[in-house]
Figure: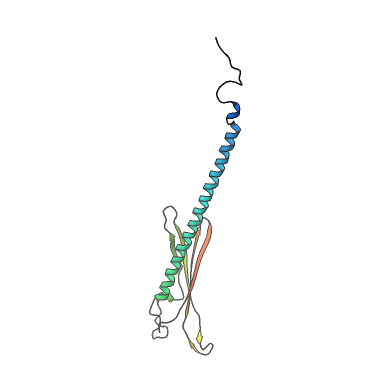
Length: 160
């Protein structure tokens, strides 16, 4: 003898206990949006970290050039003949420098050094010329289509 149960009495999951297709698609879309947001945020963090790393490397290049200018010697323009090192010559050709040599992402730039005579005297207007030179070093480079530059300045007095 066969017994038939009505649909409401059948054992097993009912329609009210399962996920509908709309709920599954909605959950999948929300998870995909969250994943895309996380990936975008990580990409922005990587970009900003790279920009800061390149800026730090450009600062290091500038600082090295400033150190060369401050330590080059002898610098005694009042001696006969005048002792002025090449680093303190007024005309300096721009140099191409490697800001980063990272594999797959090399960045090069231009280092420009400008040396000027300050014409400072002591006492102010009638005194002796102090022969102090002003040096400006600029490293300019491009990264992802945006220009960046680092500038440092210093003064150099004679070795007297």
